[in-house]
Each structure stands twice: as C-alpha cells, then as structure tokens.
Length: 155
Image (cartoon, rainbow, N blue to C red; front, side):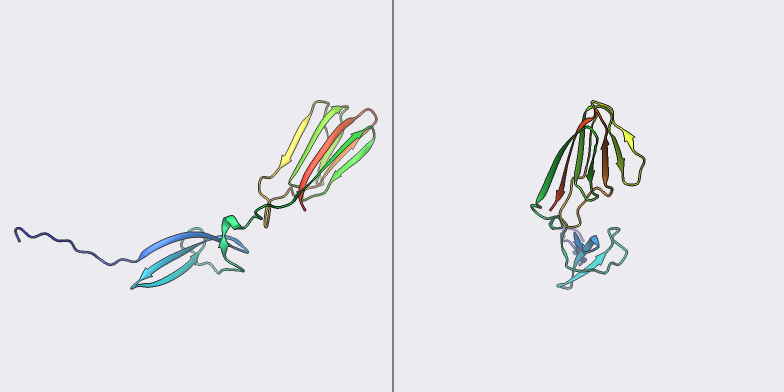
C-alpha cells in the first residue's frame, strides 16, 4: 500500500493511583476508566493485595492535626530530688551543670550523666495518630547535683 498514512489506536484502560489513609493508615486507590465508566480499586501499598477500608478515607497529610497544641515543662533540680517525665512526651531534654544525676528510661537501668552532658530525645510528627516517646523518664539528683529537664507534649 504505497502512499498511505494512518495510525491505529487500541483502547486501553487509563489507571491513576493515589495514596490515601484511613483509620489503619495508608493504602493505594486505583482509579480506572473502562468504557467511559469510573472504577475504583483499593489495595495495600504493594498495589496488588486487596484492601478493605476502615473508617473515613482522607488524604494522608490530613492525618496529623494542622496545628496541635503543645505544652512545655521546665524544671531545674539542685541537690537531691527527682524529675519525672511520663510516657507520651514529644521531646525531653536534660542539661547537667554539676554532679552526675541519673536517668532511667522506662524500666531500664539508671545511667549516670556527668556534668556537661546535654541529651535530647524527640519525635518529629504529632497530631492524630502521631508519634510520642513510648517510655517515661526519671531523672534523679543527689547532694551537689544541678541539672535542668525540659519536655514538650501535645495537650
């Protein structure tokens, strides 16, 4: 067929993917248009394992509270005494000025923190289903110790 031009179009489904979240976390939603009709299919993040939605569906970035309220504490301990930060904080910081107070994290063994020590434990996401520090902290001072403990948590 000399001198003829043309193209052949084969109708294929058009697939679009979006990562969404529900009460259990992220999943994939595939949008397909077949014969002009939209079809949605939800899968695990692997794109093949079927997924059953639980609760309200939303964009994942909407999971965390836009502007969560964060409360702060600060306590300076000079001499004998205990500073306790319960589990669930977003950050805990200790600065040791004198002596060697101890810190016990969760049910762990207390560890001495020599003068000059500055430590911080923190998470970077809060809000609904956000991160918090799992363990509580117990800072214990004795005569001659001087340290400051600060913390933040969502309120």
